[in-house]
Image 1 (cartoon, rainbow, N blue to C red):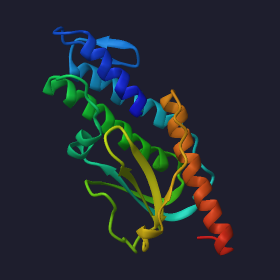
Image 2: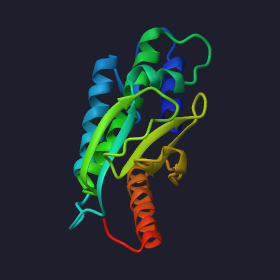
Image 3: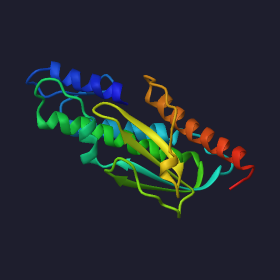
Image 4: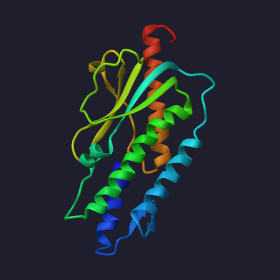
Length: 192
């Protein structure tokens, strides 16, 4: 996601004063049109995810960064306009939200709740079996984390390859969550 956003931002900066917005290699005349294209693309990728026959775990609270928090991850060069930064911020937000929705679509958890946050690390949420969040490590660097709901200090980084395809990144994210749960089950010798 970060790699794509960097290229999208660079493409917009290179166009000079002409306000053109690029998403997935296609140019749009307005940020609204490009954002709508991103939302449609992300929604299509989520719908294409096959459902599990049964959930792997009971519940998860997935924190996606707020739109304002996403601004902290936008790496800029030169002096881009506020409209360009807002566009990149919005596409990034929808991408992160789409990752959480992918877990719902796949049915990894019996109950998946998505919420926004803007903290470095969430507080414990013992009502949920797991919590998942995006940890900001500076501009253009963020990591997805997972932990037991009652012990966020035991967080582990989810292994997600820096793949070019958004579909591959979403699939990698979901598979990483599934692997974490399977490992936790085998460590605890039990089911949820």
